[in-house]
Length: 398
Image 1 (cartoon, rainbow, N blue to C red):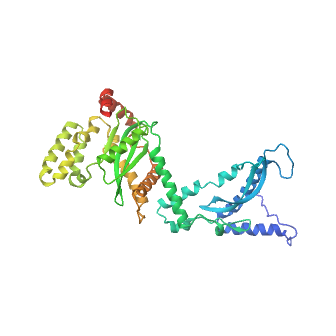
Image 2 (image 1 turned 90 degrees about the horizontal axis):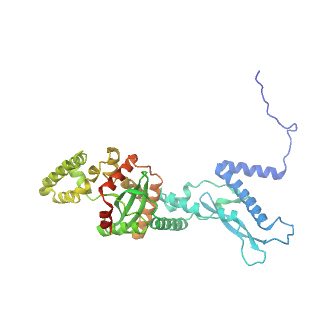
Image 3 (image 1 turned 90 degrees about the vertical axis):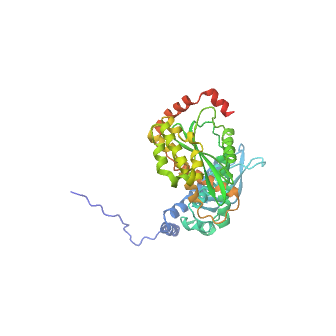
């Protein structure tokens, strides 16, 4: 037979709890009503206090016990702040000094929780998600109360100016990291270059594809247009940062966007032809037809015509060829950059444009997947090596 468990209740239903317990339960219930994070915040700040006290005991020794061999002493406390729920909240920071009084001794727990790194990351994520600095607080979770102090009322770091400063600093850091990243360890098979126009500024971006199909944002440069000088400077910068230039790499550029709507179908058919010579003949015939009606389009089509057929000459399998015949891989990253910056109303200068694009590239990289057809990249590497002899490549690179 099934057993029925009855709830256990005190024999004396008139039991009165101590005042301290009643107050604690009341505060707990209030925090719970504000949400799980509010409940956790109050508890977490209490735990933080215990961790700090334990750190001090470890550095100094138990309080009230004289230790003639101690190397550090308690030095009171001072107001400080820790990061919690997208805010900076006030917490007393314990201080420890060396026994001879010559230096401050760091408290490890405080160093970990006082860091603003998470706060900077949150500011970047919210700004790139098109949340204005004025509305930064709108989506923050309630953090409840801690030891009777209203955390939300005493918190800081959520004002428009504070969020803006954090975002600028974080994106400056992201830009500096992107432009200084060591590229010597990358085994690139393909390199894509394209431009994104932001408020009158043209940022030329570079995306690498490694031998295993991983997409890697490599760098960017700002210029009036996607001209040769800007692209050359960008590529020279990649080489200076350690990018391997002694092996052939397939470079994909987008230099004829105006042709897409005019002759896209015929071009697509030609580029998909299995015989590169036939494909070249069809494209040259198309260029002659365009000479009178669309001379600019004809010129764009002829520009680098032989190079545009490289994929066919290398015998790249169809799955990988679809990836490398266009700059779609890099354009998807550029689209993310544009989308993140869509709500910016005032662009101050080119440096601001570079910061936003660099931040967008970083966010796009988090969504990257390996390129379609990546299993064929080793075969592409072999075909490139066979096509370009080492001696001639070194002479060209020089």
